[in-house]
Image 1 (spheres, rainbow, N blue to C red):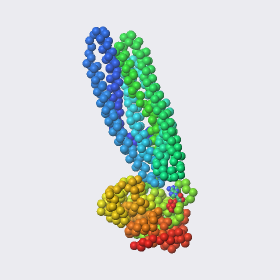
Image 2 (image 1 turned 45 degrees about the horizontal axis):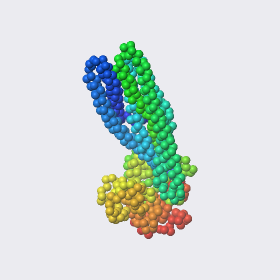
Image 3 (image 1 turned 90 degrees about the vertical axis):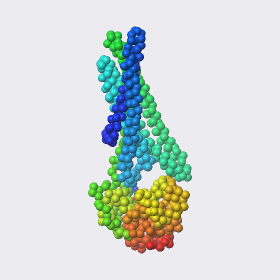
Image 4 (image 1 turned 30 degrees about the vertical axis):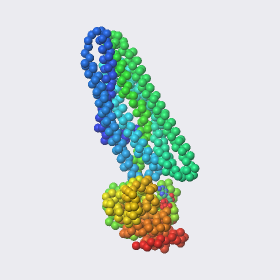
Length: 578
Ligand SMILES: Nc1ncnc2c1ncn2[C@@H]1O[C@H](COP(=O)(O)OP(=O)(O)OP(=O)(O)O)[C@@H](O)[C@H]1O
């Protein structure tokens, strides 16, 4: 129920829309019931007048019927218009609300979620929330108001009629929804989870299709998708069959209500307390009044899915970011020297610390390389410097300020990163470059690309800078992608530069060209370079050698242990440092 309260809070800004949408729905329902009841009365009265051979005023009831028909049409139109508009606004704001909470959690807190599951939360779960408004809130409000008005109306004729009408309306509008909600809770929760799992499995299957085929595992993945689909379909079928049952039960309640009404009202006609046309009117009124409660069983059945969706969203929204933003952030640093002091850090549930007691000073405008075997903690050092995680102990200072005292975005504004994993978006080359500086002119873009030695290649493409790079930049080679990343970093023009194995996986010639571009990028900046390779070591002023998260050596290139030098140095690059 806590979720319901929080959902209601989220919907607060749309109160006015909801009020008008609900009023329009109530008006439509009342007009429809009036139309049917008045038509029943009118036809019977006309028939009775014809049999008796007396004249009657048919203008007033005819006007009432026409008026009701017009109000019903206008009401339904406005109800759809207002409720759809409100729903679209609501979905849009919910997506922004969710994204705003999601963003500070990246990357540390999101690593436990599959991107397919997150996508499912952003899409399907938020869509499920919107049905809380159109399918739950509005019908419940309409049913409450209508049942009250219908009961008062029947009271004018006889208390027993009101009592019987109220009893059957309550059975269909309260009893059936309670049953329906209880039945829908478990499958609703499973549907929310299975939709996420199915999306994740399909995305995994598509992205890993080459590996799955290579290892003959495609069939297994297909079976997994198949079993998830079957479970989803089984739950959806159960909900659909329950929905059919409840609709039949609402019809049964309406028919029983009609029979009881006739049983009570016919004696009233006999002793003259009720006119025959009034009996026809009340009979049709009774049948029509069940339109007020018909949507409720399904609404409450969906509540399980809606609450599960809300729970999954609040789960993420309530997650604390790995690093809290300071209440009073430090001003912009004046200098850009970096200092790591006694830095220690362990990932959650890790068997050993990723870094222990690390010390390093990188004066402004100088370059340091961090080297070490796989898993020795090099990337973790960058993760901490970028404030994706907070150290367990020790400090990182930039220009004398602890980086935890900066606002995360302010800090990252001063840092550019080039890594082997630089993400290229499924957009044009220009759009990928503008990510670093949305205001950059074409001249600035071209200048950056010239330094990164990629301009000539781009200029030769038929669509030049408007060439689409494809998902994750698949239309570019590894080396070209890396150069775009260098051009991006140049456009960002940040005083601190982090290079995470920028030449990894490239052939010697491409590595040499890229190092030339990187050399220009490094000029005048404070640089930290992670590398497994000899390339770049000639450019650095000092080296930090890590071994299983601990400092093995620190100083100039000569401190690199001999065994490691043997692995690094045979392929020294031919490029002369500037
Ligand atoms: N996000 C993470 N969650 C949990 N453990 C992690 C995470 N990232 C790294 N680790 C662990 O922390 C240790 C250091 O990893 P790190 O990525 O910093 O090493 P590295 O020196 O950069 O390795 P490589 O050269 O292979 O990139 C490893 O034992 C690794 O398994």
